[in-house]
Amino acid sequence: MITESDRIAEALELAARKWPEHSEDRGALLRKILEIGLDSLSQSASQETSARLQQIAKAAGSMDGVWPKNWREELSQDWPA
Image (cartoon, rainbow, N blue to C red; front, top):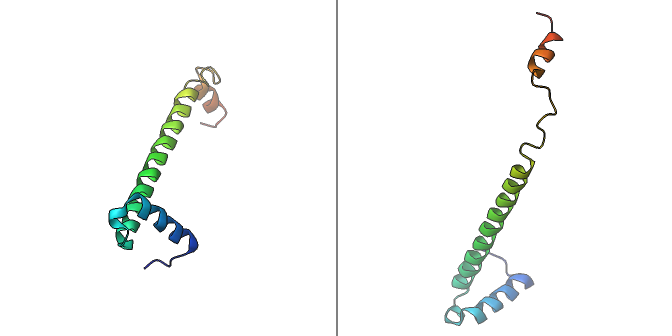
C-alpha cells in the first residue's frame, strides 16, 4: 500500500495523461511509473559504471616509473631476515 502524497498524485495525473487507457486503474499507472523509474535507474547506473571504467582506464599506467624496478628487493632489505 502506498500513501498518496501530493507528489504521487501529481505523478499519477501525469501518467494518466501519458497512458489514458489506464487512467482509471491507479495500480496499472503505478506499475508504469515504476517501470519508467527502473529503466531510468538502470540507465543511470550503467552510465556511472561506464564513467568509472573510463576514469580507471585513463589512470591506468599513469604511475609507471614511480617505484624503481627492484622496489621489492629494496623494501625487503629494511626487514630483518
